[in-house]
Image (tube, helix red, strand yellow):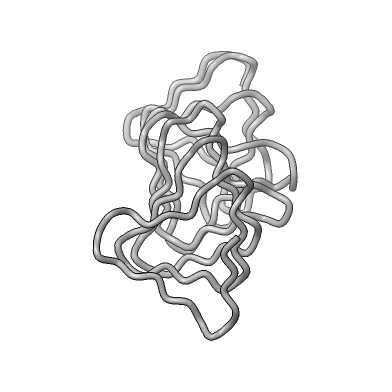
Length: 167
């Protein structure tokens, strides 16, 4: 075909089901006014420029979005809420952090939390526990020129059976 081609209403432009040809276009834009389906186990492969998806993106429940080149690229979100409905894993030697200027908070559910590394409360921030018991299973050191004090009230100080030294 070397000129314009019009396909009549109710007719299709297609290759035979056993066809192995391609349908290349020129460098102009292509507009699909109807739904586009990719049949069977074939793939949709883009060029290297940005792909704009202007509607919701749905991924089948038994499929996982993935980047095919490990270590290259990033997933960037807008400013809306991100909901993770499954387990979330951070790879070895990678971090999960809030930017230094972030004023947001980190909140967990009611399950137990395990911190496997050292934990530091930065700068002059305060560590505050809930009203339940606080159990310290290791030695406790209080920095020089800092105090260990009980707020006013009827609480008591009880030591173990070892020696107590007051200097």
